[in-house]
Length: 332
Ligand code: TRP
Image 1 (cartoon, rainbow, N blue to C red):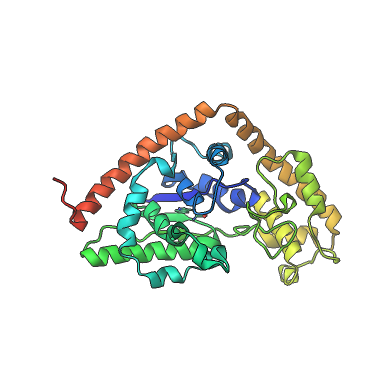
Image 2: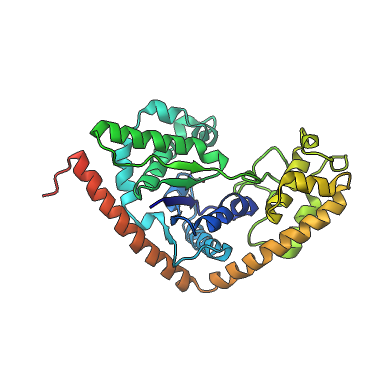
């Protein structure tokens, strides 16, 4: 059986990039795979988080999964800290991971910035925890955004290192699933930067909780360039804002980019933005409404997470016992 594992950090606002680049694809995958979808709260605290906000965000991401169409009966939805096997396995895997591999991780270099000496061990070890997330379920496929590709390759290397060290074929090497159009949704203020939860300006992103008016406003104010829209995909070269907005339109309408470019060839941004705004509102407002409905009943969200934690915990615990036997931990 092919099994999928993926996760999103409960930090800040979920936005259009999370929806188009991740959750929407998961919805399509749940029919063909056994799916485990996690809210990775242990990863979230690699950077400082306010405890109350972390709790709220954890429920919000859960609500978003469900509102976007992930079926909590068919899939396992849980928050990472409720299954202790993740951190336990991370230790065993960490003992197999050379520092040289971790030193290559570009995300650590970006996040730690100039003050590397002050960065936490957790931030540095984060990719090992991510490998443990995946391998605790012996997942075969991992849908991730382009920015997580390097971490996933590391997870494959770690799985291979475990199999080699103990002379077993225990872990399958997890395959990345990276999706096409709009895997990378860029900032509305700067088409060269990724749309991000942590970007200071809220104008840079469309949040899943934004009202139709806010969405329309943000698209109206989105950065453009002085030219009309091009008549071919090649014409988007060196026009990151046009590329991003047309890419968002293509993803939202589930159409190919060249098809969308042909439709708006030679048009002004203002006309196109009107259409984009209508499409974004039509797609997102049912999701927002459902998220608000779910968030009004935190008890029901917690019940979904409890059930998920039981299922995930059962599977991970079984695997961890097998792993501990392989490693040689005596279980008296
Ligand atoms: N590191 C991922 C991110 O920041 C989240 C994540 C944690 C994840 N564990 C994972 C994704 C396991 C896929 C599989 O986006």
